[in-house]
Amino acid sequence: MQELADGVYAFTEELDTETGTRAFHPSAVETGRGLVLLDAGLGGRADALGDELATAGFDWADVWAVLLTHQDGDHAGALATVVERTDAVVFAHPDCAPYVDGRRDPIKGEGERYPPVPVDVEIPDGATFATTAGPMEVVFTPGHAPGHVSLHVPDERLLIAADALTAAEGELRGPSERFTLDMPGAKASAERLADLDVERVLCYHGGVAEADGDRIAVVADGIEA
Image (cartoon, rainbow, N blue to C red; front, side):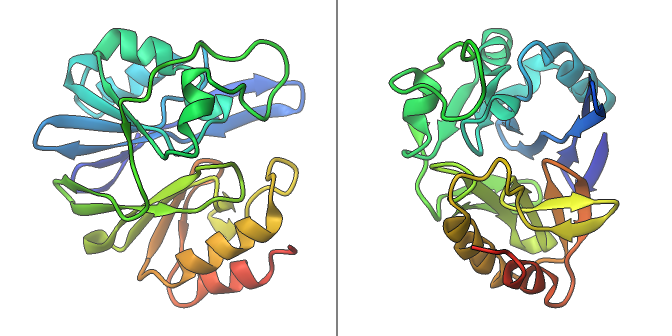
Protein backbone atom coordinates (compact mmCIF):
# COMPACT_ATOMS: atom_id res chain seq x y z
CA MET A 1 0.00 0.00 0.00
CA GLN A 2 1.22 3.50 -0.85
CA GLU A 3 -0.43 6.77 0.17
CA LEU A 4 -0.10 9.03 -2.87
CA ALA A 5 -1.74 12.08 -1.30
CA ASP A 6 -3.97 12.90 1.65
CA GLY A 7 -6.58 10.14 1.48
CA VAL A 8 -5.45 8.66 -1.86
CA TYR A 9 -4.13 5.11 -1.65
CA ALA A 10 -2.50 2.84 -4.23
CA PHE A 11 -2.81 -0.89 -3.59
CA THR A 12 -0.92 -3.84 -5.02
CA GLU A 13 -2.30 -7.24 -6.00
CA GLU A 14 0.15 -9.85 -7.25
CA LEU A 15 -0.56 -12.86 -9.44
CA ASP A 16 1.91 -15.63 -10.21
CA THR A 17 1.82 -16.67 -13.87
CA GLU A 18 3.89 -18.92 -16.13
CA THR A 19 5.90 -15.89 -17.22
CA GLY A 20 6.46 -14.53 -13.72
CA THR A 21 4.69 -12.42 -11.13
CA ARG A 22 2.36 -9.71 -12.39
CA ALA A 23 1.34 -6.73 -10.25
CA PHE A 24 -1.94 -4.83 -10.46
CA HIS A 25 -2.73 -1.52 -8.80
CA PRO A 26 -6.31 -0.75 -7.80
CA SER A 27 -6.64 2.32 -5.61
CA ALA A 28 -9.00 4.21 -3.32
CA VAL A 29 -9.85 7.77 -2.31
CA GLU A 30 -11.39 9.04 0.91
CA THR A 31 -14.56 11.11 0.80
CA GLY A 32 -16.94 12.48 3.42
CA ARG A 33 -19.02 9.30 3.06
CA GLY A 34 -16.13 6.88 3.20
CA LEU A 35 -13.86 5.20 0.67
CA VAL A 36 -14.38 5.04 -3.07
CA LEU A 37 -12.54 2.07 -4.56
CA LEU A 38 -11.13 2.74 -8.01
CA ASP A 39 -11.53 -0.71 -9.58
CA ALA A 40 -12.27 -3.96 -7.75
CA GLY A 41 -9.35 -6.05 -8.92
CA LEU A 42 -9.04 -9.62 -10.10
CA GLY A 43 -11.68 -12.25 -9.59
CA GLY A 44 -10.85 -14.43 -6.61
CA ARG A 45 -8.51 -11.80 -5.17
CA ALA A 46 -10.89 -9.81 -2.98
CA ASP A 47 -9.14 -11.05 0.17
CA ALA A 48 -5.87 -9.55 -1.08
CA LEU A 49 -7.64 -6.24 -1.65
CA GLY A 50 -9.11 -6.47 1.84
CA ASP A 51 -5.61 -6.95 3.23
CA GLU A 52 -4.44 -3.81 1.44
CA LEU A 53 -7.40 -1.90 2.86
CA ALA A 54 -6.45 -3.09 6.34
CA THR A 55 -2.87 -1.93 5.84
CA ALA A 56 -4.25 1.53 5.06
CA GLY A 57 -6.32 1.42 8.25
CA PHE A 58 -9.71 0.54 6.72
CA ASP A 59 -12.03 -2.41 6.36
CA TRP A 60 -14.85 -3.33 4.01
CA ALA A 61 -17.39 -1.36 6.07
CA ASP A 62 -15.55 1.85 5.14
CA VAL A 63 -16.19 1.35 1.40
CA TRP A 64 -19.32 3.08 0.10
CA ALA A 65 -18.64 3.05 -3.64
CA VAL A 66 -16.69 1.35 -6.43
CA LEU A 67 -15.79 3.36 -9.51
CA LEU A 68 -14.80 1.10 -12.40
CA THR A 69 -12.36 2.55 -14.89
CA HIS A 70 -13.44 -0.06 -17.45
CA GLN A 71 -14.81 -3.55 -18.04
CA ASP A 72 -11.69 -5.74 -18.14
CA GLY A 73 -11.60 -8.72 -15.80
CA ASP A 74 -8.50 -7.58 -13.92
CA HIS A 75 -10.44 -4.43 -12.97
CA ALA A 76 -13.98 -5.77 -12.53
CA GLY A 77 -13.47 -9.47 -11.84
CA ALA A 78 -13.91 -9.16 -8.06
CA LEU A 79 -16.70 -6.59 -8.27
CA ALA A 80 -19.51 -8.98 -7.28
CA THR A 81 -17.59 -10.10 -4.19
CA VAL A 82 -16.70 -6.54 -3.22
CA VAL A 83 -20.31 -5.41 -3.57
CA GLU A 84 -21.48 -8.40 -1.54
CA ARG A 85 -19.08 -7.44 1.27
CA THR A 86 -19.74 -3.69 1.17
CA ASP A 87 -23.13 -3.04 -0.46
CA ALA A 88 -21.23 -0.38 -2.41
CA VAL A 89 -22.74 1.89 -5.04
CA VAL A 90 -21.22 1.03 -8.44
CA PHE A 91 -20.17 3.80 -10.82
CA ALA A 92 -19.11 3.34 -14.45
CA HIS A 93 -19.18 5.25 -17.73
CA PRO A 94 -22.31 4.67 -19.85
CA ASP A 95 -20.23 2.95 -22.56
CA CYS A 96 -18.78 0.59 -19.97
CA ALA A 97 -21.96 -0.25 -18.04
CA PRO A 98 -23.47 -2.83 -20.47
CA TYR A 99 -20.37 -5.02 -20.20
CA VAL A 100 -20.43 -4.91 -16.42
CA ASP A 101 -24.15 -5.49 -15.87
CA GLY A 102 -24.43 -8.43 -18.28
CA ARG A 103 -26.19 -6.87 -21.25
CA ARG A 104 -23.01 -7.54 -23.21
CA ASP A 105 -20.12 -9.93 -22.63
CA PRO A 106 -16.75 -8.37 -21.86
CA ILE A 107 -14.78 -7.90 -25.05
CA LYS A 108 -11.52 -9.36 -23.78
CA GLY A 109 -10.68 -12.52 -21.90
CA GLU A 110 -11.34 -16.17 -22.45
CA GLY A 111 -13.72 -18.58 -20.77
CA GLU A 112 -16.53 -17.64 -18.42
CA ARG A 113 -17.13 -13.97 -17.69
CA TYR A 114 -17.06 -12.51 -14.21
CA PRO A 115 -20.47 -12.31 -12.48
CA PRO A 116 -22.56 -9.40 -13.80
CA VAL A 117 -23.24 -6.59 -11.36
CA PRO A 118 -25.72 -3.73 -11.85
CA VAL A 119 -24.19 -0.30 -12.40
CA ASP A 120 -26.04 2.09 -10.08
CA VAL A 121 -24.75 5.37 -11.49
CA GLU A 122 -23.48 6.03 -15.00
CA ILE A 123 -20.86 8.76 -14.83
CA PRO A 124 -20.18 11.10 -17.77
CA ASP A 125 -16.94 12.75 -18.77
CA GLY A 126 -16.27 15.67 -16.43
CA ALA A 127 -18.16 14.31 -13.42
CA THR A 128 -16.48 15.35 -10.16
CA PHE A 129 -16.19 13.61 -6.80
CA ALA A 130 -15.44 15.56 -3.62
CA THR A 131 -12.52 13.87 -1.84
CA THR A 132 -10.20 14.70 1.03
CA ALA A 133 -7.52 15.43 -1.58
CA GLY A 134 -9.78 17.90 -3.38
CA PRO A 135 -12.01 17.44 -6.44
CA MET A 136 -11.47 14.24 -8.42
CA GLU A 137 -12.47 14.65 -12.06
CA VAL A 138 -13.58 11.86 -14.40
CA VAL A 139 -11.69 12.04 -17.71
CA PHE A 140 -13.10 9.98 -20.58
CA THR A 141 -10.14 8.10 -22.11
CA PRO A 142 -11.46 5.46 -24.53
CA GLY A 143 -9.21 3.37 -26.73
CA HIS A 144 -7.99 0.66 -24.41
CA ALA A 145 -11.64 -0.30 -23.89
CA PRO A 146 -15.07 1.25 -24.50
CA GLY A 147 -16.03 3.61 -21.70
CA HIS A 148 -12.55 3.70 -20.20
CA VAL A 149 -12.05 6.57 -17.76
CA SER A 150 -9.11 8.02 -15.87
CA LEU A 151 -9.27 10.15 -12.72
CA HIS A 152 -7.56 13.51 -12.22
CA VAL A 153 -6.92 15.08 -8.81
CA PRO A 154 -5.78 18.57 -9.83
CA ASP A 155 -4.99 19.88 -6.33
CA GLU A 156 -2.41 17.10 -5.98
CA ARG A 157 -1.32 17.17 -9.65
CA LEU A 158 -2.11 13.45 -9.62
CA LEU A 159 -3.51 11.29 -12.43
CA ILE A 160 -4.94 7.80 -11.91
CA ALA A 161 -4.63 6.61 -15.49
CA ALA A 162 -5.92 3.03 -15.17
CA ASP A 163 -4.85 1.43 -18.50
CA ALA A 164 -4.75 4.61 -20.61
CA LEU A 165 -1.03 4.68 -19.73
CA THR A 166 1.38 2.11 -18.30
CA ALA A 167 4.69 2.27 -16.46
CA ALA A 168 7.80 0.14 -16.20
CA GLU A 169 10.39 0.64 -13.46
CA GLY A 170 9.04 4.11 -12.77
CA GLU A 171 9.12 5.14 -16.44
CA LEU A 172 5.85 6.27 -18.00
CA ARG A 173 4.79 4.49 -21.20
CA GLY A 174 1.82 4.26 -23.52
CA PRO A 175 -0.98 1.69 -23.28
CA SER A 176 -0.34 -1.96 -24.02
CA GLU A 177 -0.81 -2.51 -27.75
CA ARG A 178 -1.63 -6.17 -27.15
CA PHE A 179 -4.63 -5.38 -24.98
CA THR A 180 -5.79 -2.08 -26.49
CA LEU A 181 -8.73 -2.33 -28.90
CA ASP A 182 -8.44 1.05 -30.59
CA MET A 183 -4.94 2.49 -30.79
CA PRO A 184 -5.95 5.72 -32.58
CA GLY A 185 -8.49 6.30 -29.82
CA ALA A 186 -5.89 5.46 -27.17
CA LYS A 187 -3.46 7.94 -28.72
CA ALA A 188 -6.13 10.66 -28.71
CA SER A 189 -6.87 9.90 -25.06
CA ALA A 190 -3.18 10.12 -24.14
CA GLU A 191 -3.00 13.46 -25.93
CA ARG A 192 -5.93 14.64 -23.86
CA LEU A 193 -4.20 13.55 -20.66
CA ALA A 194 -1.12 15.49 -21.77
CA ASP A 195 -3.15 18.70 -21.47
CA LEU A 196 -3.61 18.13 -17.73
CA ASP A 197 -1.30 19.65 -15.12
CA VAL A 198 0.10 16.40 -13.73
CA GLU A 199 3.19 15.60 -11.71
CA ARG A 200 2.63 11.90 -10.94
CA VAL A 201 0.67 9.11 -12.60
CA LEU A 202 -0.63 5.90 -11.06
CA CYS A 203 -0.85 3.24 -13.76
CA TYR A 204 -2.80 0.04 -13.09
CA HIS A 205 0.06 -1.82 -14.74
CA GLY A 206 3.38 -0.49 -13.56
CA GLY A 207 2.50 1.61 -10.53
CA VAL A 208 3.59 5.20 -9.95
CA ALA A 209 5.59 7.16 -12.52
CA GLU A 210 6.76 10.75 -12.65
CA ALA A 211 5.10 12.95 -15.26
CA ASP A 212 6.64 16.37 -14.78
CA GLY A 213 7.13 18.64 -17.76
CA ASP A 214 5.88 17.29 -21.07
CA ARG A 215 6.38 13.61 -20.25
CA ILE A 216 2.82 12.55 -21.06
CA ALA A 217 2.95 14.50 -24.32
CA VAL A 218 6.16 12.72 -25.28
CA VAL A 219 4.55 9.36 -24.51
CA ALA A 220 1.43 10.27 -26.49
CA ASP A 221 3.54 11.36 -29.47
CA GLY A 222 5.27 7.97 -29.48
CA ILE A 223 2.06 5.92 -29.62
CA GLU A 224 1.68 4.32 -33.04
CA ALA A 225 -1.95 4.66 -34.08
